[in-house]
Length: 281
Image (cartoon, rainbow, N blue to C red; front, top):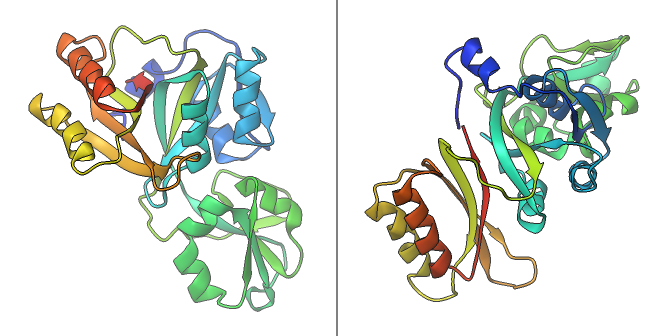
């Protein structure tokens, strides 16, 4: 996960032109917050789902889409990983943002009266210990976005939203309630097509190996022989083939380097399915 050294470096990663970018809404969502940071000056198109955000991009209604792909606590965002694999799209930038989760209640709500806690499933997982300790009898109810939980609030419920959210009549907890305080979510900027950039710092790919002993090891050795550092690897079941897994692999490498190109081609030949999902700084 790339953390920028300073704001000057972060600003240099912001796109220079204007346009339209789709992301998960509503206003106040972490995805909207990330889109504002990544695409300053762009018109935001707030969508009801990650799938809708990608469909808007593919249809040409937006120039880019912003998707979360990994959280440092709960791991990969599976829906977004599937969208990267299944569509003709390509990640060209990444942007990790700190996730500061706060308990949200209506003014006057008493802690002992809370029976329901609403938020996005990722936020509920990231705050699971806090909820279990403080609201052991509360029912956790997933919403499509963290900020949507504010629409559900009454005297017997609470929500979990980002510290950046402000809403009249809603009180946020003073402390970050996430189980791990150093929590980051990695967002990516996605474009139509699969045109590779001239250079990159990181490369992200998906691979399905043949279902036989040593197949995954053989793939990993391709990177090891060229001393390429794998920064991420996780698996996800292949939807249409029970017992078969797709591996998501990120490694440090310049897409324009001949040695890296050779490794990618060797890996492609080794796998039954292979796709470069992104190359970025």
